[in-house]
Image (cartoon, rainbow, N blue to C red; front, side, top):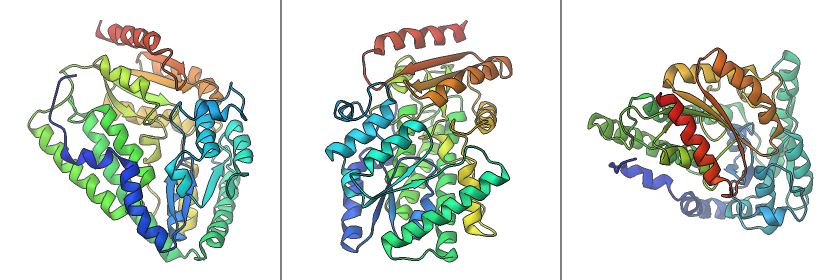
Length: 385
């Protein structure tokens, strides 16, 4: 990558902890409750309609894992271990600020970890169905209503349809703004790096002031449009274009994304939970708001769904929009649902989409960085031939 002008507004997304504390203090003084969440299945609109604010707690760094392994098995997904390690040692400012936790049954590892975590803070478990059938929809709607009752008990604020519609409209505006930013990666030479784009998307889990956040997203879009018009890009012409899918990544666990950048590739689409998967699909603003929320969230194409046809549909759509030259499926060790699904995904990518495919299984440590670098560079070289 070469040096290129960066959008000034990116600085506002660089230090989410500082921004979070600055905005949190007056809310706490006013009695606002903070809900700690770990998954994109947690309905943010419902949390906000109850007068609480959601904050992401998903562990994405290696540091807390040794502490977690005093309780949890070593051969467990690093995301689960890091999440619990932060809670056990009370070393995460977002955990410390949370008044209660929203867990979910997306995988067996997280489900059992939440049993242990519930000893540390009040925790409500959302029982997630594993398909999108009418019967599953009915179960999930009942779970949403059960969550609404829990939130009202925690905050003392009853959730109204009016409040839900207000929060749905705002969340849809934020999703639209994030999708507008992601669309810059469809250009031959995007005006923003993949790492910077990851940071912007990840920051949405730490938003307390939605209006201010939305204004920053719109300002960033205008700056990127200006940079693009000037021909500014951190990427060389003809750089390999990668669609990165699989397990969630973020600050501290972005080594595969970083290695791709160092090799001169551009990740044109980050499909996972910290990327596009979390914002595609708006909530219907007409009709019953609770039913609309249930439909939208249950349609999330996570590997915990069986069958997970939605993920293949999404990857097809992203392939058409962003024209990748290859697909990389990055799976955390012991993330069994994504690992099992990887075989069928590879068959689909190479057979139906006619694109090269690479599965990478790794953890949060840096021990395999050079091995990964070699594999990634070889994968990119094959695309150049």
